[in-house]
Amino acid sequence: HGPPQSAGPASPPAAPCASQPGHVGPPAPQMPPAASQGIDIDTAMPYGELEPFGREDTAQELTEQSVHESNAMVDQLERAEVAEEKRSAFRALTRLRGAAITSFDGIARSQTGNIDEYNKVHSWRAAHPVRHLAEEEADVSKWAFPSQADF
Image 1 (tube, rainbow, N blue to C red):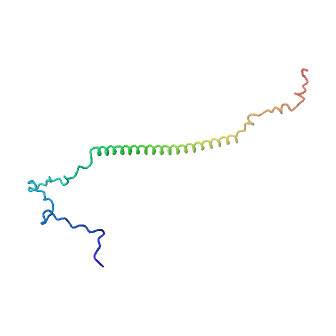
Image 2 (image 1 turned 135 degrees about the vertical axis):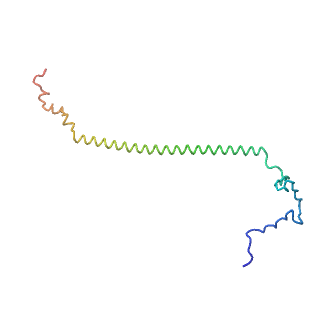
Image 3 (image 1 turned 90 degrees about the vertical axis):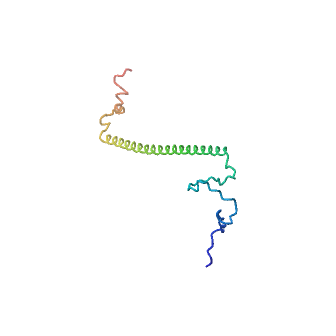
């Protein structure tokens, strides 16, 4: 086996500290008198030479875009809630309709059975005899040739 291989390129050696001999670069900031008393105060701004980041109008545009997107998100949530309420109401009404139809079908079947049962027990013709005109007029001699006709 050989020496272990690293996963990436070798990292550069660490930069020497300002307190190390042979230090190259700007001088280390002087410690304020409060630091010597144990109070940590950092008065040096590390990125003072950089230009300011962004502009006020960019921040305003980003804020307005954030407000717009937040409003759109709330609107979408409201639309989703409305859709869910419609779906839920439709499902409940469909189930109610099914129960009502089933109940109605049961009532109709029961009523039809009651009618059939009544008709088995009661005969309308027995209670209400029908006199047919043909039976009354069977004797043609009585009605076609009466004896006391006004000829």
